[in-house]
Image (spheres, rainbow, N blue to C red):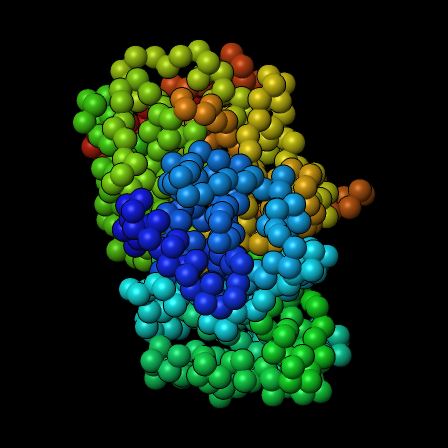
Length: 606
């Protein structure tokens, strides 16, 4: 659910109230991330502190509120959006990774500055970096006792009370007991007593459960401490536990109150405990050390097994995509008919797409806020439409829609860019779209040695844009969960420059990735073509080792109106024709009448 957009006067009053609270605590500033106690990308309404204080509704960013200045830190995806949503009369804008909060404080903080932070919202590495900068200026980073935003946020929502839900082995492909046994073997091999699992999707995967606590991501607010004997302590609010869940978890999982988690960490004296520094807030290792435990920095042991989908999860992905693809086909037909009439807007289009998805009764949710982007909004890769930003979809313009569904057997994520007629698209738009398509096909067709990283493959998707002096400012591919988070690590296909997380991760069989090159002309239009793929063993394996390839699982027509067939090689045409023949084969049995006729035409060979 979107937070109601406050007016500038309300936001100014909130900023003033926060500064008064900071003054009471003797703080010169406070750091506000988009985060929760689990380092989640998408957070529940109760944790939307950055949006509450600033109005910024993006999914990545942070702020620094000083007594005399307030600064927003966002990356290139949000350069335009942050300026539209955050009042320049009260806020300054900074771009990352060119700068960071630590760098800004080094250059701008006064000597002796005391900057507050919430240890339940930041990792330890961040806290150490800021501490080093402030210490050099005679200041300090101060761990707050209770978040100061919460102290002034009178109508702050409570955390979700929704029940945690069992996720059956028939869908998960492996039992929780098997997964816990695998982790126990790893702990024993590493001479560790336990590991803390704090990422919500890791908890859900390990215990085979799902939830309704975070919009569009089926997770439940909880923690796990997994032990070397295969047992686990599961920390969750008692109101969220049902008899069915208790039976599902079994005797080897001890259910404990969520509020007891910090105390349990402090009770592990003498234990060697693994903590993932990238996925754990600073308060977790701090509590362990205060209690006398030995903290060992190790990657969350569920991360790679969760990313490498088993045969049941892979088939679930295929099945979910076929149903989702039919909904997309109905939607694309709808746009082709209604778009040229000039009566659609972004909100109406998004609502109609949801209606088509809801025709499938197993739809649980969408997998993220639909990016329904007309004209200049299509140039914002992570645009989110609301009543204030809603634009009409004009005839003879580009329309981009990035969306996905959450089904019990799989999570989908698809982007299609279409030309809204009736006239033919401009030559420039066709050229850019075709270059994006060529990059998409190049990546989809690539065979590569086992151990290749996403950073090594990223250039394939960009090369035809680069040849024209063009590029795009986001990654080419992210991991996707199995009825879990639509953005899942550790793998990522992106430029390796700048130390981007995941670009050095070897791609492994079973991983699901997106393939989504794009192009964006600020203020005019944007283009993105996105399918999901599963990494599979290739028949090219042999004397030179094991090779892998991508199996495309997303099927929906790509707009041929925007393609210059003369720019395609014979191999690219073969891919297009094979892809659309398969699309027709999979989707046609679910469609009828005008939609089926439209599909047959849209899937004709090029």
